[in-house]
Length: 254
Image 1 (cartoon, helix red, strand yellow):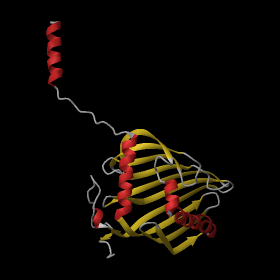
Image 2 (cartoon, rainbow, N blue to C red; image 1 turned 135 degrees about the vertical axis):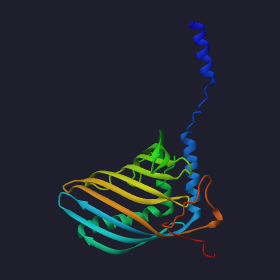
Image 3 (spheres, rainbow, N blue to C red; image 1 turned 30 degrees about the vertical axis):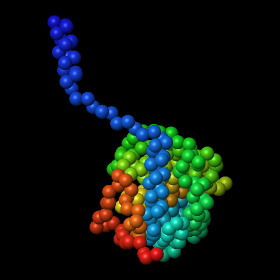
Image 4 (cartoon, rainbow, N blue to C red; image 1 turned 120 degrees about the vertical axis):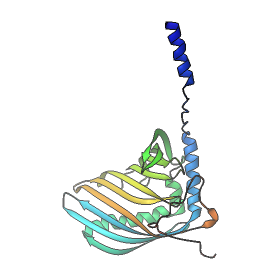
């Protein structure tokens, strides 16, 4: 009886369908595909205009400020911002918002970008696993800067499993922005537009000496995006244009 039961159990087991387990790519494979997507986007994106809203609050002194900016990017590394409206604390506007706008221009230069890009030359990487992020499947990697730099992030990134764009960056600057800032946590989220991953929202919380806890939010709204049809869409990417998507146009005559 025991033998018959074992035989029946074995037959039942062997008749069950085999579920194939997905093999996760190596960290090097993820980074290679992420780099390919990044290089494609640098070629594909000619220009965009975005309206951004900066909001900052200091709870201890009950100070807050708001700034609305129209920002234009032009390939390869031109970034221009024009202030549309400013309200609230002058101290926050001058010491926080103005400094951010200055740092953006510095970080946009080709030389600086090479020093802060999320690549093996600047970071060490650790694979944490696969999880849902922004309603899409992502690979989560730990990132450790190879040197102290205020533009490098010690934390983690999420990479889209389908088109290999960066979906999210979260962590702390590898170098304190100033003597007064004891700790800063940054969370940058991206949204996918026609195969590209563009910044959607940035949130930052800082612990500042004397001033205490301060928070910053930057919300992005894209008014127009100009792309180069010569490069098409990247592999495994599908257009996601909707009625609410920014206006797309063909490249201007060269």
